[in-house]
Length: 181
Image (tube, rainbow, N blue to C red; front, side, top):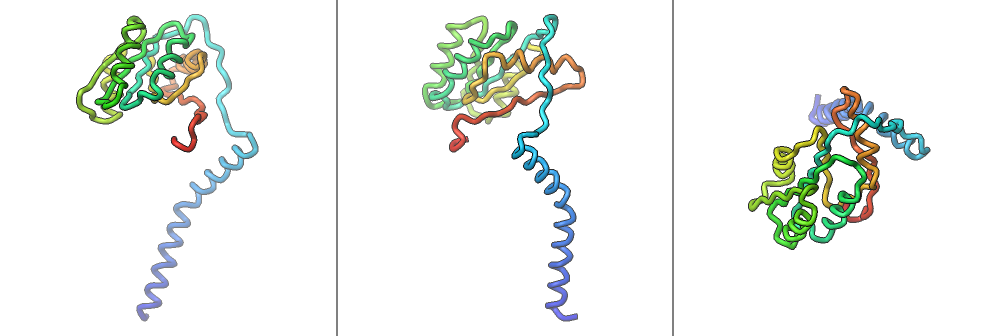
């Protein structure tokens, strides 16, 4: 067998294996794309919140250089109609006015907002872990600083946790700034 035949055989073999391996993922993705295009994507049915199930929710917000968006989020969280919540803002080494803004909100809402400052930025996962250590809620939510939650978001999400098999819930994301996100 000459070198060209070996090369062609190798290419055909590798290509066949790649196609065989990736075809199931492609089919699932394509089917989901079709469902979304037709407006038939699978969604969980809304759950009516039982009056007796309102556990404390700790909302962790890791922030770094978010002065242009953090007040909008904090305002939305203060206006949230969920009765038993705490907001833990983890400021992770900002170089802009983010620390000052967060401190002011924490001072204005001392029973709702906790402010934790980290002098050295160790990244978002580290900030979230720091917030989790300060959390007192049975449920932990994590919001990015550029999030704008609707007032009833927690009321809609928390009932899913009454089922002990549910460990996490992700809400529907609607991007305000799709060109930047």
